[in-house]
Length: 180
Length: 180
DNA sequence: GTCTATAATTGGATAGAC
DNA sequence: GTCTATCCAATTATAGAC
Image (cartoon, rainbow over all chains, first blue to last red; front, side):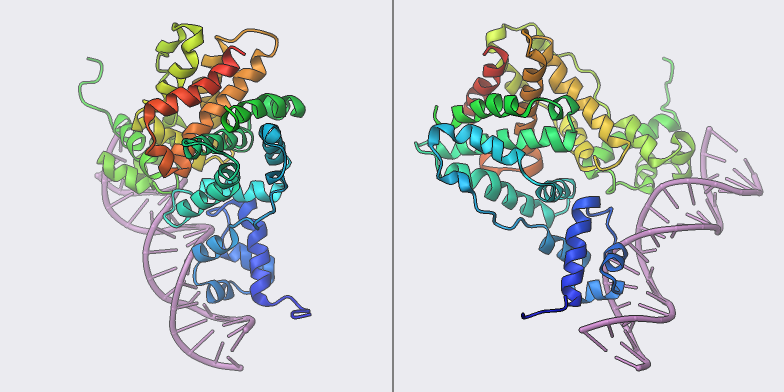
């Protein structure tokens, strides 16, 4: 009831959130965003300062609750892999856009943040032992590698593979880091 | 003795091979390449057709002999991880440039080729069993994930970690896919 | 083969009227 | 707050003289 009609700023935000994950940073011009939002290009800069500032404001994942923090520890490996594989296209788009723009000085820290928040932190919170830190970072690398193969490389044979089989096999590897 | 003085085309090729991995595709202009090669920008297009064609011609790894194809199978996991971690900056640059330009239609297949040639094929050649194909693809994902964490994300704690420890732990995971 | 000059387009960002 | 008009810099690529 606070905003019955979407404000210009919100229209721009919505358009950017749709286009950036779809076409990447360089592939999305300020004019494209403005056109999709139905506003003038000048307003985009007016409201957000610059294209990069807008990009950084858009490209963050809503802190989705991780329901798997409560599950049994000895099944966390498979559950986590299953969880990341159910990830929707929206998250996928943000992930890809950040990776492909990660040569920019402003984007690199943001990618690190997302990697930490989405992969390292959830796993770190359930690990114990003196080397838990290293193990959780290796676990995050392992998880990221699966998404890298599927989404960045586009390994067709892996994309076509039986999902349950991937969850079982790759989940077992992750489990070996969780409960050595 | 075939070419005592580097031809213009070779000069361009050498400059591109140095700059693309260093600054990426969009970060390297045709003018930059021409200037580094000491030639005119028009010659770059003249000799290679377009910037993207030049990029694709440059961005392939010289088929480096993999000395680890001969080692003992039960040590392949650690040896392979050790091998990719010794990879020089040159390979690293190619890897990063391909990933960050992978939204281009022409680059995506090239990244797939490199992933296959560098990770999947060497492992696949040593694996046996009916599910060797899937296991080698998961193994490639695992290896790629380590380089993703180190080079793309730039996980500082992983970069600072004891190298032998990483080889031992992550190598053990890879080994579990090689000899289940 | 090489280079000068420039075309043709696109990009982000700004000034100022309303 | 909004929009019209535009600036200015940068890009890839081409045409044509030498």
